[in-house]
Length: 291
Length: 245
Image (cartoon, rainbow over all chains, first blue to last red; front, side, top):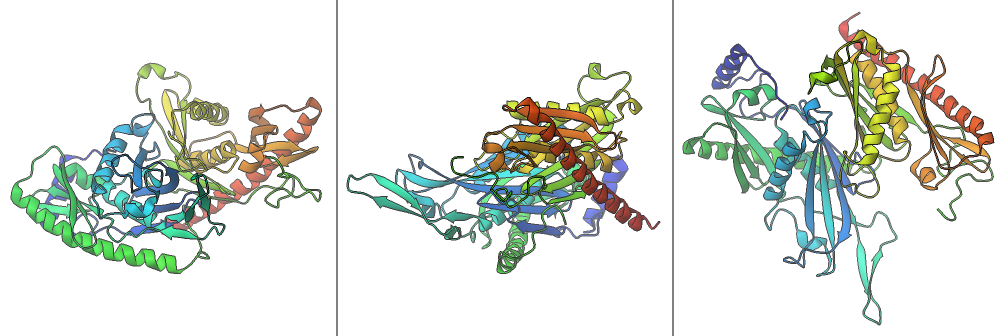
């Protein structure tokens, strides 16, 4: 993780402020920074999204490819995650330096999606045991300003919302050989339902209170954090404690309640923004990194 | 590609451009606040980001420090979703390492490294979407990023690719034109003096045609220079308005 060095005085200042529900930038303990989401940023992917959360910048590209289903789940397609911590974020990520963090984030993403309800994998199946769609979700970490997991999960949800998978038909000829036919119309696609895709809410324990959406400076002051993956209905799909310090069980329950509350609000605003962007249609002005 | 006409009889290319015409270039400096310098460029459908850290102390072994000038360190990385076929590894493969070395050679010629002895300048380039001319887009983005970081340079470094089809030199090749297998020339130029920082050519080209292709690439690079100059001036104007001058 990109580290920032703080003096003792700065740490004390942040900790005392949090106890009074006042953070350095004026937010309360449960407020997110201003989030900017834009989809369809990279055109040769099946779906893409860019999320800017304060100084954290994430770009996600989804590519749909045809492959064989896994042996234990012959009627379903699957998702593959790959996280690239680019050297843009900090020189420490040059070469293989960013691999550790990338693997940790990718494993967390696998875990939060590892349940039956997040994504309808059966809709990704083309013909059982032979062909299915594999969605390669590639996350590119461009700038690290704290609260990576939240930003990445928001970006993954937005990119999956933007994903358009071409409609295919399986034709069987007389000899029993199957042929896959792609529809002629490039806009004839299936869209995935992202109603149940979870988002991660990270809660950092600072002093006696916990904060949502910590900046790099606040993360340096916290000893322990709890990552909770919450769906739009408030269902928790995965929970993980990270950090060197320890948490007592009461804090854990309190943090879980906060995460469910904050998660539901996050989901409603994200859904409304994504639907509004989609309603602007293909003629909307794409800003990307130029804005 | 069989049956695909790279240059029609009326002189139009696959995407409707003329032989010497560049793709649309849009650029922005100062994209990321945490880096020392950053820039983003779009050349047609090719999108590249460049970030500069430095000059700072040498990271890793101090033995690599040069006593009279700065060390320029470049990394080229292209996102896994940047190409039509998904790439397995974003960087670390042979092509990316070679591109990194070429970028380093290009910028060592342009950056005034004598002003920062015993230090290191890191230039990291990320290709977000590759549609031909990735080396040129990376060099142009990196030039803007180095300028945004305030590192003194001898001159802009402007790059462009060129090819040769049916007796005509084409400037700024797209992916379709590169994949057709004809000769390709990549040129990085310091426009004011006309000095060449990097010149690379692939495939066979008759020596008689070399001058024509080189001139097409040089003219395209000078056109890129005009555009980049405008972007830099606009950025400085915006920054000075914010400072209240």
